[in-house]
Image (cartoon, rainbow, N blue to C red; front, top):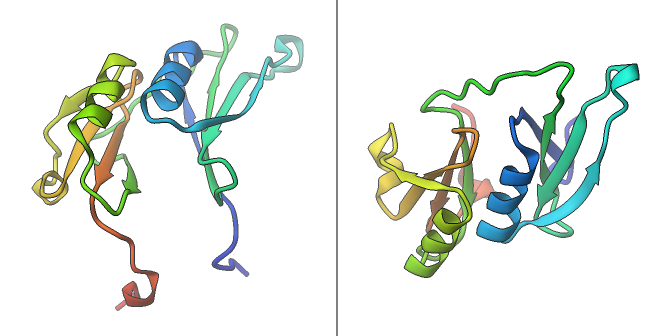
Length: 140
């Protein structure tokens, strides 16, 4: 059974792990939780895991020279981060100085009280002032 405390890993391909690390760690301030080199002879990929230190989720990014998987994000492939306060101009500037690009959200809902930034692989990260209220989130 999936529990509220179950950890979540979101896995995505990347073409440039160094650029991804620069964006997610330097730009967004996430911690590098793990970095490793795969063994190509075993079909393994290089790996970067970033997330909030001690948090219940992390983002896994993989890349390899022997088995290239090209990222194919859509405008609705979102990583939404609930900040609880409006993203400051300084925070958004830091994200863009580290490889992000501010874009209008495909769904204008996210532009109200937030900003959408693409990572170096084109995946969208929404930084929103909203707060996730799990007690109100029920399936209908």
